[in-house]
Length: 257
Ligand code: MN
Picture (cartoon, helix red, strand yellow):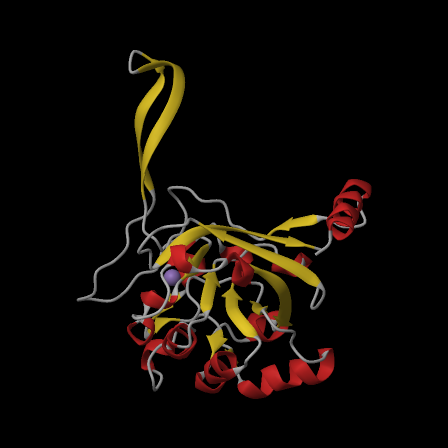
């Protein structure tokens, strides 16, 4: 980008012809977290301990200590999160050039309203590319499902059924498609994880984690405001902590539209 291109973007933001969308859910003690069945370890909810609040411990300042999982709230999955990607990048190693790029939206809000366990297939992704043109190098694909409206209600968000969670996501063919596409850098969802709720029973289990992270790509979960993101043409910024050895990190996710 030349200096004049950046200047044009600054001017476009100032005059309102471009704007910034915040695709991040608020992060707090009530942010829903993934629940795994026995015997697996679970991540805690966010908690914080006060260090000072304009008192003897800090008369002019307020600050807290956080405890939270790497995979809490709107967050990034790094390749080393999964067995298939264990020799890949940690969060700190991810190049900023992979965290800023074009984003495509695949909208299945209507289908998910009718079937919360809706599975996104390779055919759906092929259809998107036919309709909206080839995916540009360095692209992220975001799966719009309308699930974000549940984000502040943990029971509705996790949607645990008799046979496990019922949430939308790619099937095995969709996961394979995303990991094999040479121009796809990452995949983002509104739900608690990049895989469908039923994906523990797929072959392979959790295929998006398995294929995508194994291919050195990234995931982003618990996105907000996807209904405001255009299907094509937005510029995405994913900003996780530069956490050395991190398998994931809470992230601020923004888009220029
Ligand atoms: Mn995660």
